[in-house]
Image (tube, rainbow, N blue to C red; front, side, top):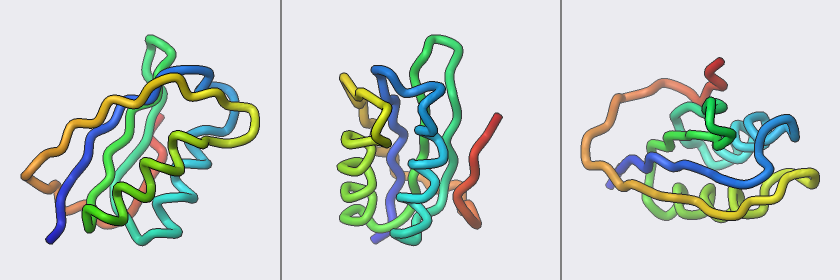
Length: 91
């Protein structure tokens, strides 16, 4: 069953290729959604797909690219899907 996770990643996650890393992780798992930088220094992302695959992507987000340092990820599971067609980096 498909679901949606809205996540907020805190730590050193801007200026370290974190959005591209997240897009690559999502694409490798066949997930749909988006990722963007937030003004407060966090990164926000939405994943749509099978829950197990989303959980795998979130696990990758905890690791992040080499220059990043993730201190926290807040996850909000949502029932409704947007029906996104791919995974994009929003600016």
